[in-house]
Image 1 (cartoon, rainbow, N blue to C red):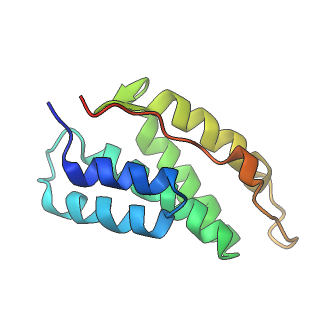
Image 2: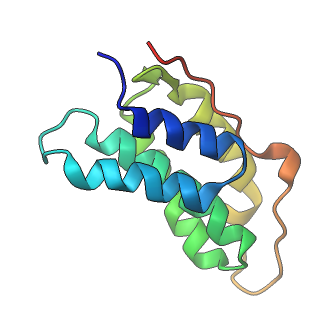
Length: 125
């Protein structure tokens, strides 16, 4: 099954650092698919991964941490890949990126190490 073009566009936006736009594009798709769509949680996982990074960059650290945790829980279901997206790599890279924030004390400033930002690997099938 070929992925929806909006999913592929969202992945491209993610890799260009356009996390808000990625979220918006894939969310439009997610809102249209039926509740029983087998890829619904995959879309949600990517949406939340993008939103987590976006929130971190905006300084909303508790929101970023929560979104990261739910993104990983959604994406884990699709390991090692879903719709051509290497979910195993994405989950591992999200865990590396968020390792310090996941242990955050809730008060100190935390800046994102941009070198650890996930790069999505996918094929369009």
